[in-house]
Image (cartoon, rainbow, N blue to C red; front, side, top):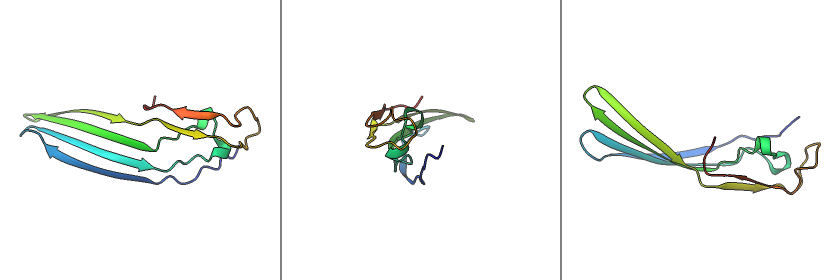
Length: 102
């Protein structure tokens, strides 16, 4: 089944700063276009994340380095106006991806 996905372009920007001599923090922002057209969007292909805000905290002690990271993804949604998939059960259905990926 041809899904007609297109190229995805992602822009990333970030910064790093020292909190103390042994602790640093990194934060960034990512912005992307959606690769899945509305005409072939279905619950199994709803990969529509478009924004992400990642953070990383690094702590160094001796020769060891410990990192904790997290990423916030705001809710993304896309409405299917007219689906071109063979089954029509997904026509005009909203697909909402909540903030975190599984």
